[in-house]
Amino acid sequence: MFATLRLRRILILLCTLLICITAIAPKAWSQLNQSAQPKLVLVLVIDQFNFDYLSRFQDKFGAGGFRFLMENGANFVNCRYPQATTVTAVGHSIISSGALPWSTGIIGNDWYDRRKDKEVSAVNDETVQMVGANGTGASCRNMLGSTIGDEMKLATNGRSKVLACALKDRGAVFLAGRLGNNALWWDDRTGNFVSSSQFGSAIPNWVRTFNDRHYADSYFGKPWQRLLPENLYTASTRDDYTYERSLPGDGRQFPHVITGGASSPNEQFYETFSMTPFANQMLADFAKEAMDKENLGQHPDTDFLSVSFSSSDYLGHAFGPYSQELQDMFLRLDQTLASFLQYVDQKVGLDKTLIVLTGDHGVMPIPEFLKERGLDAGRIDPKAFKTLLDNALDAKLVPDDWISSFTPPNVYLNLNTIDKQKYRQPDVEQLAAKLARSSVAGISEVYTAAQLFMNQAPSGPRAEGVKKNYYWGRSGELVVVTRPGFIYSAESNGTSHGSPYTYDSQVPLLISGPTVRSGKYSEPCSPADIAPTLAAILNISAPSQSEGRVLSESLAQLQGPSRPLSLQAPIDTPQSPPRR
Image (spheres, rainbow, N blue to C red):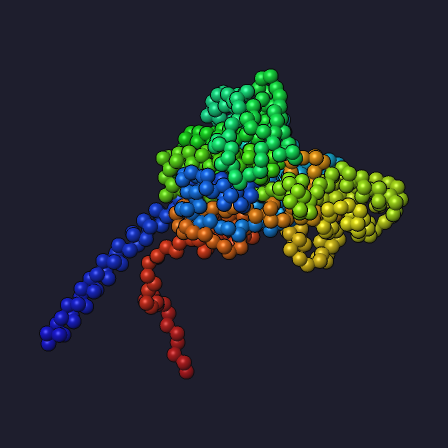
């Protein structure tokens, strides 16, 4: 009897507890979801950001910049671009849309437009004007599909603020998307931040106030010294390496006096200033102003800010990835990043900010640097290549103008000449591909438009990368892939990028913030995975052409309300008639 009474009391207590839990669970779950929803999405893109910079320079990094994100975020150590052409416009379009060039149409920084008979920029848009300076404006009109910023605007009925700032126009407009509030970039002709009429007829007052400070002018004639003693730059070659390209108006070794060869601040100086770490600091200070004046992260709906640092690209082309200048650039960028993250923490809170840090491409070491170490390397002059291939076609067919343009890696054949001489286009493509492979040192593979259109390209990773970069009507009749260690360059010094090889395609990817589990992840991934992952965290639609995957291995699973043990049919549900 006593046992039965005790059992009843226990059952009553359990039922009471269950009722209480059921009553408070929806509220607790709602609060958990609300706290996990970021107030700000911050996308940081470093132009020309080799994967190994994080490990090579790590021992010299401070605690609050790169190292903070590496230790407190998800570090994806096997992140590679899968397409064949690795340049700024392509990288930024992939980051923002989650889609590759075969879908977006952004096949390079530039391509040959047959209707205009000239090369055009990926962000060229003659229907808009530059705002804050004279000239044709820029937009992402050439890119098909939406961006993560566009989807945030759609999901919140336009309430989310979407802002992109950069040193390059293509670094800003592709991240801002079509629906962004503004895209702002630095005009190295005037030394001012400018925009495009796609985003409004005038630049905001706070931008005008920032420009009135003449930030860059304060660095005219000042020396760029090493941040640390020279003997600590053990990850780099000697200073003044023979095949480095001089800083304009200066030389190849520290200290670098920043003038651009001008007697006062002008376009020459601004171009040189953009190659220094102080231009990155200027951009970070500009982004702080944007956060403050636009109240980013202070709204009920999540806001979006992207910052694209390009000084490393300008400098890397001239000095290469193993120079003391490049190492100093990243040591100073680490300090800039630490200061910026501290500002974000004060204004929004890092626990309420979803941060992505990645690169738009890497870079190849200077070819002569590789040759000195016994590796196969070299340069292919684009103009010489075009002339050699055109002459070879003259010899095999008839003398004529066979090539309209060579915008590496795309060869655009002269279709009018092919029609006039009554040849079949696939036959001329096949012959030109054979001649290119046999006549030019440093060429690995050549793919024709007919092969790609008919899906007859040979199998292999290079072919897959070319397919993912090929867009009918913009890509050439030939796609010419160099051998590893070779670059397209008319210069006798410096280096470049653009190939499908690891030094150009593998970049860092760090993600930190609410719902993100810190750790090192080695699963293969791509910057195309950034947009769908952000969409999954924000619980919104991914961009319209997104083909990346959600990086679910790094996302914490929130504990939701328990499932009911059974489903009870509503009282008014009609019952099935009895069987006869």
